[in-house]
Every structure is written in C-alpha cells, then in structure tokens.
Amino acid sequence: MNTRKIQYNLQRQRILDKSLELFSQRGFAQTAVADIARESNISKGLLYHYFSSKEQLFEEILTSSFTLIFNYLGTNNDGILTQGEFEEFILHVFKSLEQNYLNWKLVFQLFTQPELSEKAIQILDKNPSVTKFRNIISDYFKGKNKINPQIKTTYFISVILGISVSYIQNPIKYPLKQIVEFIIEEFIEN
Image 1 (cartoon, one colour):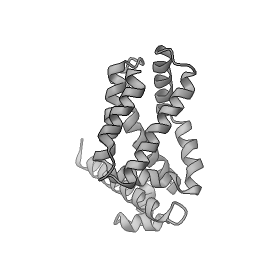
Image 2 (cartoon, helix red, strand yellow):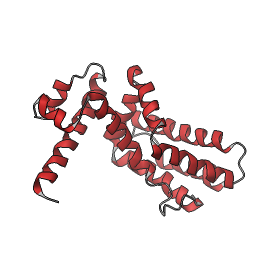
Image 3 (cartoon, one colour):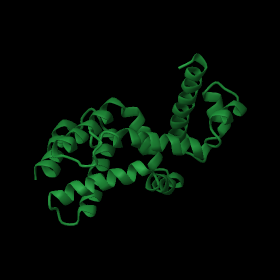
Image 4 (tube, helix red, strand yellow):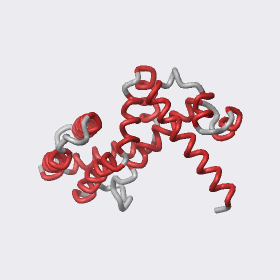
C-alpha cells in the first residue's frame, strides 16, 4: 500500500474516532461537522473529502462496530454454527467488551440518545451482517430443537446487550467472567 493511501486511511479513522467521541459526549444533533473537523485537526471542507455527511459518519461507526463482532460468528464461514464456534463467539464478544471498553461505552451511549436510537435500529436492520448474524444464531437454536428459534435469538441478543450495558456502567466490580460462564451454560450446554 502506498504512503498516500496509508495516510488517507489513518486520517479517515481519526475522523471516525473523533466523531464517535463527540457524538457520545454531546449527542448527534448537538455535534456539528465543524466540531468534528476541528477535533480531527482538519478543515470542514477536507472532512467532506472523506465523508459526505454527519449521517454517513454515524452509519459507518455503528456498522463497523457491530460488523467486527459479527465476523467472529462461525469462524469457518460455512454458515453453520457449531457448539464450539458459538462458545468462541460468546467469549470473543466479552473479550472485545473488556479490550475495547471505551469504544463500546461510546457505542451504547449512542443507542441511548433518542434521536439516534431509531436511526441505529434502521441502519442495523438493513445491514447484511446483522441479517446473517441473526439467521446463523436462529439456525443454531433450530438445530438444538429450541421452540421458536427466532424468539430465542432475540432473547440471546437481549441478554448479551443487557450484560454489556451493565458491565460498561461498572467494569471494575462487574463479575463478567462468572456471568459469561452462566451464558455458556444457558445457551451452549442446555
């Protein structure tokens, strides 16, 4: 990769990182493109060279955050989730939560902002990674003869999100490792 492409990608990532921080601190509506440009040490016009709008920034932040997690589901990419792959996925989700604590804290703060919550759901619902993720998990539960695998999938996702939010509120005292063991017991071993 040539030097210009590397610099372009680094600057683009810097803009995404600063946008995530500002959206989380101030809210989406209260963050101006000029604020993002200033925090990224570039002009407003140059920011538009990287992103067409503030909405595009939000969509990319949200999509990339969740796609990173979804990519760990079914590591051999055959579309069939084994018990071992599902357990590895669960472990990876919570390892990512610990290692990328600030990123996940900011993403979940975005979800709590009323003006973004519905938009976030719409973005995720049209994302092919999200659809694939839900289908693979639903097929896993169907293979385990679970009643109503789609509802079981929604329940699983809700449990993961709820635990993540609780952990983010108090990471030092939260018994994440023990709770992960309960999740594996409930969703993998039963």
